[in-house]
Length: 432
Image (tube, rainbow, N blue to C red; front, side, top):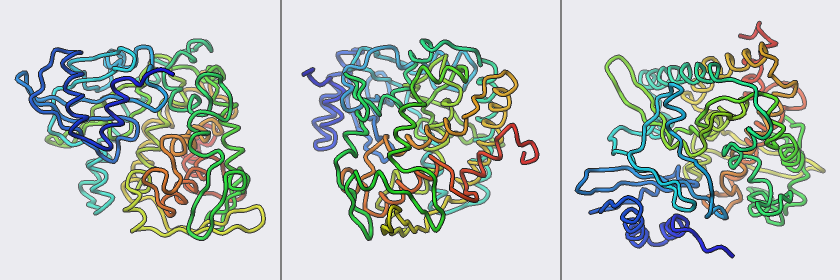
């Protein structure tokens, strides 16, 4: 068995002994960069699901560090931190001062900023809406969206299956479904998190075999796929080589708002990206904005990153009726998340999909591709089972219900995801 990398050891140690982890990190910084840290402070925040970040004080100044490390991926190979790709394309991206790309020791060092991350600004608006501040935040999102769309359209090109398969973004999607050594499905996080496990919700406890085969009825609305069907379809359709049919673009790929700085300026606010761990120049066009769409909108308010707070603020219950899981919940998008969804539709998705259609690169099943990728965002970014990590029975049930809602359409009628897809569909100009 391969020995854990130093970043893996530090991330594991941080959960139980932050002081020891900080001392080990100081040693790593000295070895990699010759940086003598006077103090190291690890920031154990709610958004660090698969990463670690924090602050360094040294004679050279104050710095911010971040590294991405996942269980079972201690020896990731390849060039993952490619801010220059994004900068050359014209995206606002914070360039690191020091970079290590050695397998298992991939870490970025930035000059410390004192602006908040966009995720923190938006959380405050989830907690207490302020229409004026919300308008500034949404305007900043629209401005960033316009820049993203310009880069996507300007860099869109036909790609080969091998070019697409080489992109690191697949670590966030397909590679979490399969065993990394054998390619066996189900494997990876899917097997580790869910297969053979028990699921505890308010009102019912289910084993995996039963739970995976139940149809969801959410607030009286039945949905068309089970969890088993959604995972199987994602495994088949999101195979990297199959995504070459939609072309490739330059993209960050993982621009959730904890990877975005928010800077108040005279006349408005501006956003800047950082930590391009999964950036690339041939990212499948339909995947480029999926993580940002889910994690910045549907993961909120609270349930993914603040399960305890979601449990205080929302209700959820479940019961089994025949082959269906009846879910009732009062969770809903907050005003700022609804506005961000509209901004994302207008500034990014609509022009991107229209251009793909014009250039003959929009797959007939593009809605299915988007839905399956959106579905994998919550289910495989962390373990959604109650008690496995930080989730409670209520937040777990909300999470799985939202995963199904984004993953497949309702049997009849519409919901917020269907309305979003209708709004960006280039075949439906009357809805624009």
